[in-house]
Image 1: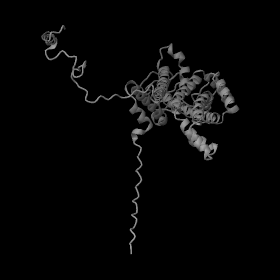
Image 2: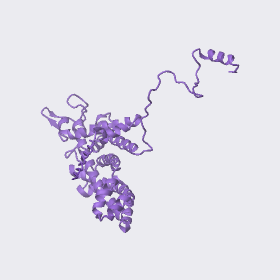
Image 3: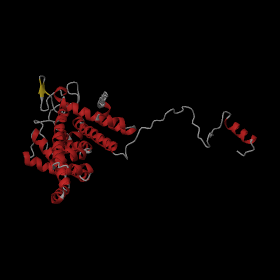
Image 4: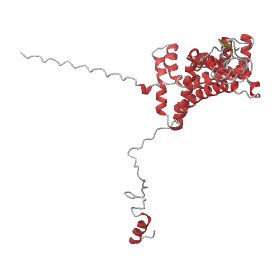
Length: 362
């Protein structure tokens, strides 16, 4: 009687361990590792300036020696146009406010405008661009025409109109923030719209989108799971550039007198406006430090945006060149296989003697 040979049970192959994402792949760290030379210097400088701006805005109550609307302390009134001293490191303004405190509190106002403006324009621009590029037709044509027409409105003029509509030109803290943010939002929506629409038109023709349609996926699922994820990869580059533009719009509103009142919040543009008469009198500290804050913050955001743009473009990206075993001695240029263009150990005289012995004309 034959005994049946048991079939060996195959040993299950253990699943391959998932590779953990290293900290080297984080967004900022990855760009720093890819950048070289001047490009890395620009990115590092932009990140440092932006980090200082963000930290100052977050910890403004701890860093500012006084409130943004404080005119006196226990010793009495501060006094107007006081030069820098131990009590007021950057002096006082024509209104009697501490310049250092106004500059520090102004970072919080600027950050609020940037966040509100970028979030509003990002949400509206991405949504309109996704719908327009995916469905096309008459809706796409209408939205394209409207977005092109928005470029005819200067952002600062639109900001003045919005400031007057919201609060009659005398803005409270959130009135000034919303006036600048809404005007920037209207102007920046076409930028996000165009980028997302162009990527959506390209991606919806890809094979994986067609496969999702074939298996019966809904339009909402295709737009959110497949198209949106691939169409928004370049948006971080636009965010940094638009952040600096929104800050300049806020400063322009304050400089023209449509910004935030000093009793409502810190505003660099308002402080610059009130310091115009001080410049001709030799009082430099009331205008230099608010203007320097605007310049450095905009410079930091712009450097980060331009550096990220260069690194995202393969044509502009520079690669690190690694030369292994590079000789430290004088290099010899090879002219024939196994030969070299060298004067030899005896210098030029030895080279000429060698030619004469071989019957060659040097």
